[in-house]
Image 1 (cartoon, helix red, strand yellow):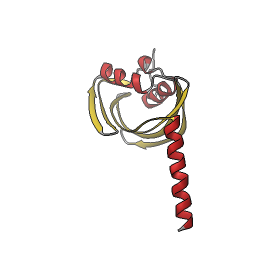
Image 2 (cartoon, rainbow, N blue to C red):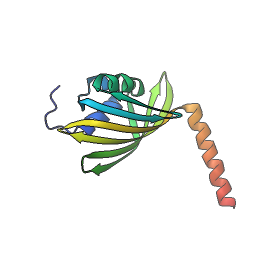
Image 3 (cartoon, rainbow, N blue to C red):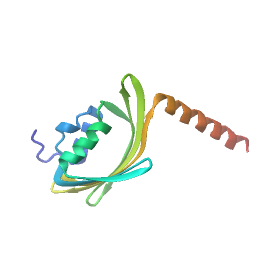
Length: 139
């Protein structure tokens, strides 16, 4: 697919919601993925390694319930809440990416991921938040 002049960050975000990372051409050959996930941090070097990792993260089509983009001189900070159905079960994930761009391709993706939250955990988090909010209003 020819993407001359296309914004690589737009391309990446479109692939995330489409569940089509394998066909995305947003990255430089020497891209570095620096990922922090619950209780772990790891690095992947190069497009094949990044796509292999992200194919698991973004396997299903979804949508952004929240999306914030902050331009940087050489890239962008992107924060989002992504929701999707996995095996018929609603899920969500909260990510922040610090993306570096050079020559029209993403060269570095430092991502912080809060984890993958299935519907039951989302409900538990919502109930805990409501309880906390009620406690703060009483005090």
